[in-house]
Length: 303
Length: 303
Image (cartoon, rainbow over all chains, first blue to last red; front, side):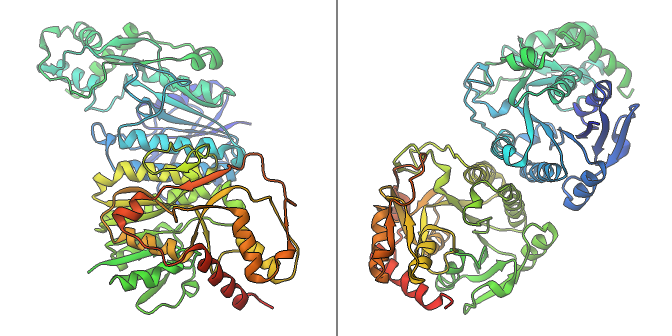
């Protein structure tokens, strides 16, 4: 039997992983600070646990006795997460979780990393070739955790993979991020001030990100891989599409916000491992992904 | 008032830091797992605390309310420490300690790093120029902790330094390391099988290492620096001196152990920051340092 423990199971990405794990035959145990925040999913047992509480975490791992660990939980408050000291707490909690999981007989772990680990002076970020040189505490913390995991995995007897997430959109995106804030403005009829949007980014629907993680967990891939669509598009194009989909294009004020001087012009993702070794196929392209997101946003926005 | 909290205060290096801190006018609080293992030192308050126990650690920091933190505690079982999973626990415990210290108003932290963080394909290890590329879990764990500290220090409001230790000898060296095992053999009249000893290393007396850390803590130096003598000598020379000092040269069998294939021929330390900015002067050279070590070993060896 394969039993998967999923952390951050009520989060923007984690919540989409639950059904995908059930589909692949895992017994699924979903952890969030409050069990009630885990989306009700057939075949999934929800658990409430504060992962900063060592004893509670160890008791949970002991009880569930997972063979697989999918670790999404992290500090993710929009804007603040780049520099928040809570990043250190998550490095510590993640190391203890992995140690406890391994000691309890866990076999395979997959953890959510970030494109922020890379040196952003490169335009195409390759899991094989691009140097790692995070600029932010968030990127540094993820990078430090991965370095530890990579070096410790053999002596812990763990198979492991590390998925570097790029730019994610979709249902349940927290407010305060580009697409969520834009949709919130447009659907409320407010003018949306955005940058010129010439920078290129790799966007992926949250459900596909989650499914890619589940496919990776279910594979034998070892090491770091990019979790992304493989296609970089101009932010401007995404914003314009959302204007069209909402019928509120006229509310968008391109260039009303200056592009920050240190904003990299292009962060494209190379995804050979995800495509060829994991063999992942996304469910959404940008067009239908954004369409579904707008639909969800219309339905869920408080009026 | 400056109040220093010292972790690993009963350890090989930490124990030597206590009197040096008192001399510089610090109110000194020394932590070890058992308070009874902290060497009795005038002006030092000993505390028993398991640093893996978050609540106990937080209560201690709250009680002592230190302005300065000198963090030596780590997993150090000879031979095993290079690959032991306990290295992960110490990354986690150290991050939590630093966070708690900062939150309680702590101002300056100095942590014991290691020359094992460097790329050992370089012969001279420079804190300014040598790339960091640890080969072992121990080196990786120290490197990961430092990366986090470096990036987080500004938002934590901490002044910080990171001292990279090289090869240390002296009183209280745990058995199972080169010099301690050699002296144990020689003084017991046992034949000592050693390598040819052609590799060059930087040796420093534990008391000087501790004093260099205290001087660094008491300075305004920020960032990483080597804590070493600045002089690399052949291991063979150190071993031969110990043979002469014990009068047991004939027991030493050079070349009876093969030199491991991956043993770097030279690990010399460049120490500009320690010399010029900290302004540290060692108390021991190799000759009198080894002499004192042999004296101590004669006096303390169980007969």
